[in-house]
Length: 105
Image 1 (tube, rainbow, N blue to C red):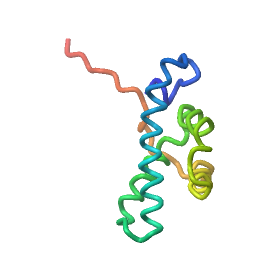
Image 2: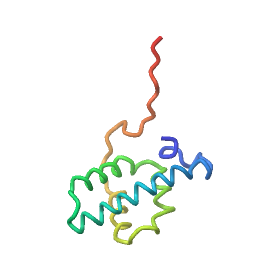
Image 3: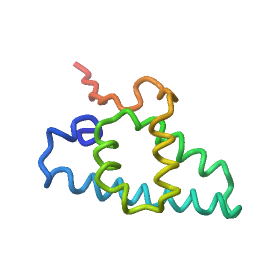
């Protein structure tokens, strides 16, 4: 949560593990994109990845990641992600809200 909502407040060292995690996710996403277009992937799997991206595209950390790592992906995948990020799809409320532990007193 800290990276996605407040990436600009973290040091480069604090951001690094989050960026590597997002990179692994985006590599998987790129693979689903390629496999979908080859006709070897169930479209429902790819659709679930798109939902995750739609839920997180309003978070500053995602934009920081994509801006810094976009060039590492295939051009057609870059265009596809840009289309999703720039679309007006709304995310459900509360998907990235910080969850506080309840205390029983």
